Each structure stands twice: as C-alpha cells, then as structure tokens.
Length: 339
Ligand code: AMP
Ligand code: MG
Image (cartoon, rainbow, N blue to C red; front, side, top):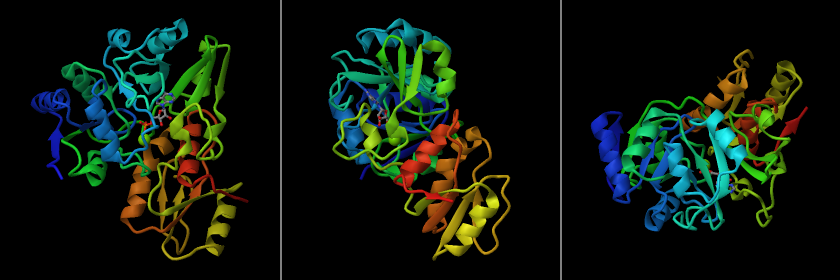
C-alpha cells in the first residue's frame, strides 16, 4: 500500500504531479473523456506498474497521450496524410489514431504490437501535465480492470487508493466515455476499432471508406484474433447485473420489468421516461451525448445503492450514440432482452 495523494488543480500540484511522472510514478489525471492513469510511456518499469495497479491483461495496449503535434515525430515512424488531416481537425480531442511505433515506445506499452494509439487530449489539466512532464504519457482509464471507467476523482480514489502515487482532481469529465479509436487499413480507409463521441459520420469526409469493426456489435471469443485487443475483454461492468431491454416504447419496457423484477432490481431510464411504481429508477439522458456523459457515473451510483439487477433502456446505434450502445452491451456481456 502506498499513500495516494489527492491533488487539487493548482500550478504547484501540477508541477508535483509532473515530477512524480518524471520519477517513474503513476499519476491519475482528468481528460475530457474519462480519468487516465498516467506513466512515462517510454519507461518499461512505470508502464508495467500501470498494468499491475489496474490488474489489466498484458496484451491490452495503452494509449499514448501527447500535448503537442511535434511530439509525434519521436513516437511514430510515419504520419500519413490522412492522419495529419484528422489530427488537424479533431485534436486536441477524443480521437485516438493507431500508427506504426518507434522503438522508444516499448512493447509493454503497445501490448506487444508494432503500432501505438496516440491521442492529444483537450482537457487543460491533461495538456499541462503532459507538457510539464516533458514526455509522452501512457494512460489507460484509471479504473480497476473490468470496472466502469472513472469520470470523477472520487471514482479513481475508490479504485486506486493505495495503489498509485497521486490523483489530480479536475472535476467531472465532460464526454464521459473513452475516445474513438481508429486505424487505417490503407491510405483511404478508416477502420473504427472503438466508437466514441467522434462518430463514423464525423469521419466520413476524410476517407473513401469509414467502417466500424464488427467487434463493436458482437461478443468476441477470448482466443479470437482481433485488430484491437481491448475488444475481447468483458468491460465497463458494475457489480450489478446489467440487462439492456430493447423495447419499442416505454410502456412495453415498463410492462416487462414489472413482470420480471427480482431482489434489488433497479431501472436506468431515459430522462423523458416517467417513473415506474415500485421499482427505483435512475435516468441517463435522452441524447447520446448526455447518455455518454452519465452512463459510467450511473453504473457506479447503482453499485453504491446496492442494485443487483438493472434493466436499462436501449440507446440508439447511430452517430455518437453508438459509443453508449457499445459500452452498455459490453457491460452486459452482449446479453439483451428484445421485445
Ligand atoms: P483504455 O486504455 O482502457 O482506454 O483502452 C485502450 C484501447 O485502445 C485498447 O483496449 C485497445 O482496444 C485500443 N488500442 C490501443 N492501442 C492500440 C493499438 N496499437 N492497436 C489497436 N488498438 C489499440
Ligand atoms: Mg479502459
């Protein structure tokens, strides 16, 4: 057990956190998507400590965060024209671009792959921490592996207290789900490995073809060969059993859950839905953007209030909403009730 310092967002604390990173320690920090668990991406010992603190499988690669485009040169072998255009349009922001890595990024960071996912976050605390640390920062979400990603400093403390050097508190994350991860099958094809706020539609003007990996929609066998190793693990899941219900309307959803409630049953509803008599309900927004912001927060709330079974209203699968659908289905192990 180590003493985990909870640091408020001050210049002095940012400098302390940057020194910890330079010393090879682990610091959790806010980004616009979720909180990240940061370490110097070039140091094997520090990156190994990230995997250990999270309990993360070694073949699940970390995303490397930069604060300036000039840092790319030292990390990746080449930056194709299409990547440069996307970086100009979407960075800083919630887009991760997978590119061939240089040797300074060790295999532990890339999960043994010869590519690395790079992102320039927009959160000012993240930007300042990276630039003060003077190194690329490898940062997965700052949760224990398998649990919902943290969107507040308290969530990080709940999972990581005693395991890491410090947590920088930057308030609640704006986006709420992890970045969109893309790679290029060829110079004209964008392959979406993980959906995020930046949608297929947003990326369409930049390539001849943009498509979403099938692992976003279906469960992948543990021994399957996948483009993005994170896809095969159960993920994002609270302790409570999450059961999405694909219902044509609120009335049919309500009828179903009233007939199928068990001990400690809760519902996670859209904001526009009414309450259900006899079943405690939380709400997670009507739009995909609001649902993305709220989903992991509600998952952690549901665990805190003792939910054991949670029926969830099914989000849409279009635009940014696909990121919510994907996290929900992963949390449910792709089990769904279709009415
Ligand atoms: P997390 O750190 O929890 O946000 O997860 C990062 C995810 O990004 C991983 O689970 C992978 O699916 C994906 N990823 C990161 N780097 C690569 C890479 N080099 N190739 C393919 N997918 C990657
Ligand atoms: Mg994660």
